[in-house]
Length: 141
Image (cartoon, rainbow, N blue to C red; front, side):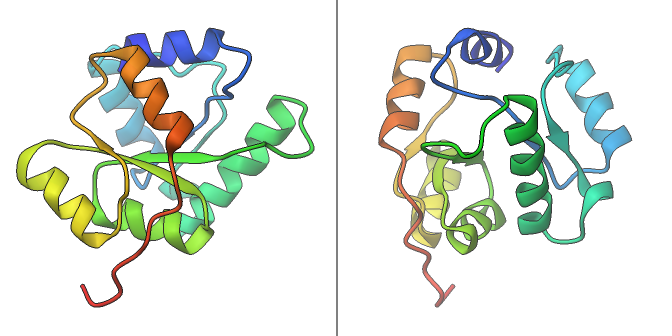
């Protein structure tokens, strides 16, 4: 993950931001423990909104200001849980699921169209970002 963020931040085509349903202090602790640096990345946490969609909207707003943009050509949400898929579908933003085995199958079952095992292959990951689509949410689940 660290390498992916570092490389994505160097690309002119992608603007990186972080939205999480974790409380800020918990998220920062976990990120530091995983040696993931998020300084100078727009971020929003559970402290900033009740619903994931609210947190996501806020981080997009922060990112637009941070990157001095009026809009983005494409917004891609990345997540590993069903609520991430649902939030992306509700917001009508593209989504890439991260998961393997049963987790990957579950992400696809709830509507994720693109799911990748991990971030190990950067070029493969960027291809998934490029082809990411809005989830086709399965409301029956």
